[in-house]
Image 1 (cartoon, helix red, strand yellow):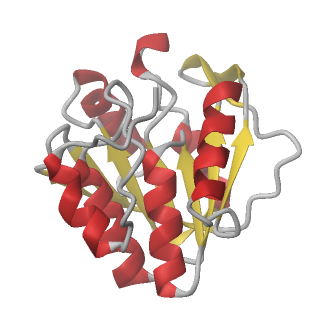
Image 2 (image 1 turned 30 degrees about the vertical axis):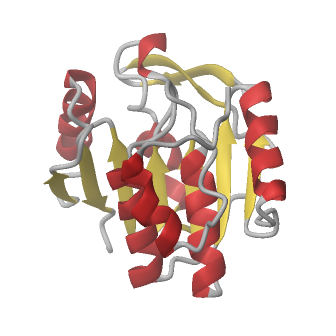
Length: 208
């Protein structure tokens, strides 16, 4: 259930982004305020043109509002839950941000990879321009081991050189394990652990 009775930690972010109404908070699923601050910082400092988000929610609103303030950038969010996709679309419309972000219902489908098979977003028919900010906050970890691992193998040909990749929930063992796999596959990729509430890993896609 959406609520505007958000924790105090979201207050500075709401004021910074000029969101007088606050943010529609969901206790079970909403990202931590420090991760949302990181997203807003990245949009402000790097002015990405194309943002791709795995999952949707408060982060979509923050990214869209940050793009609006920067005067550039577009967000494409992949959401496996039809109801959640519609909820995020409605929130974007309520905040007047629908021209800055698009939420696509992308059901999870079987994706075979050399290391195994995963349930991941169906990208069929999606035109995704070169991505210079990738935010990974889905699919949910409880669905399968290393649930978010397929993001880089399946999106590699859509990432612009130097693309910034932000992985949420990186304090979890699964996320640490999948980052280790990514780094073995792309050893030239820069990696930094950020001390956020739920952990975050920032990676830089190779430039050449």
